[in-house]
Amino acid sequence: MEPSEIIQALWDRMQARDWSGVGELLAADVVVEWPVSGERITGRDNYVGVNAEYPEGWSIRVLRIVAAGEEVVSEVEVPHETMGVHRVASFWTVRSGRVVAAREYWNELGSDPAPEWRAKFVERL
Image (cartoon, rainbow, N blue to C red; front, side):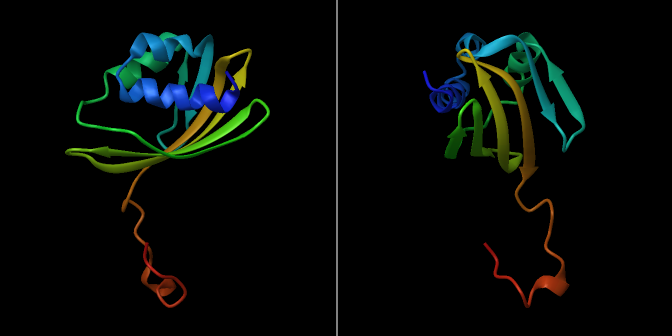
């Protein structure tokens, strides 16, 4: 599979709660950083575990995937029944058919309200 196909498969398997399938796409020593919350996840089992144990009620909608060589960027929307809608911009590195590293920026929609002073320059999404 091409790196972009691996990332699409990763999100598809997460949506399906196919945790062993997610693990198959990750290097054993994968490192994933979440700068917004200041966390680093080291190792396949930890990355799969943190996703498998996330409170149920969510779904995944891939908005886009862009790839250049072994570097892949995905933008994904993750609505949750009780926790609101999250968006994630993920920067993946794929080598030899496995994700070896990632940096993901998870944000909750509306958690960073626009200041009033910008109102005359912007329109609301």
